[in-house]
Image (cartoon, rainbow, N blue to C red; front, side, top):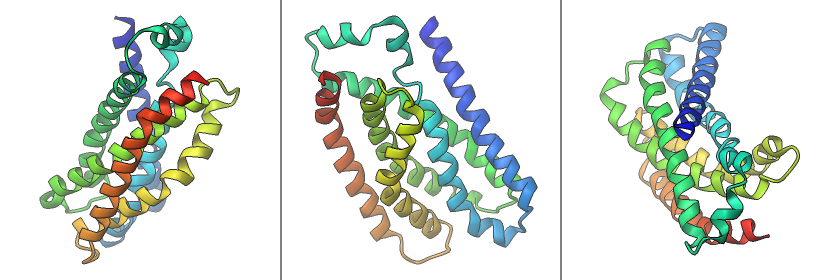
Length: 209
C-alpha cells in the first residue's frame, strides 16, 4: 500500500513537472505550427530528461526511509536483480509520463504529427531505455551524497547527452525534418546496449562500496 502511494506520488510529480514545462513554453513563445514542429524534438527530450530526474531522485527513497537496502544486499539474490527491479519500475513511470505527454504536446503546440505518433513513441521508448538505465545506476552511486539530486543531475546530463542528441535527431527524422534516421537509431541502440550491459555489474560495485 505504501509502495503504491509512493509510486503514485512520483508519477504525479513527474507528470506535473512535464506539463508545467510544456505549458510555460507554449505560453511564453507561442510558436506557429511550422516553428513548433522544428522545436518539438528538442523540447520533448529536454522535458523527458528533467522529468526523469524527478523520478530518479526518489528511486531509492523507500529503502532509505525503511533501511531496507542493507537487507536487500544481505539477501542471496544477485545485485543485478535489485538493479533490474529498480530500473523496470523507473522505466514504467517514465514511459507512462511520455505516453501521456506526447498527445498533449501535439495538441498544445498545434503540431500535425498524429500519423507519425507511433514512430515517435518508438523512438521515445528506445531513448528512455538507456536514459533510465544509466540514471538508476547513477542514483545508486549518489544516494548517500548530501546534495544527491544536484550531483545526480551533474553526472547524468553529460553522460547521457550523446544518447539524447541521437534521440533528437531520430525524432527529427520521424517528423520528416531530416532524411537521416537509420544511423541515429543505430547509435541509440549502441548506447542502450552499452548502458544496460554495464549498469547491473557497476550497480553491485557501487552499492557494496
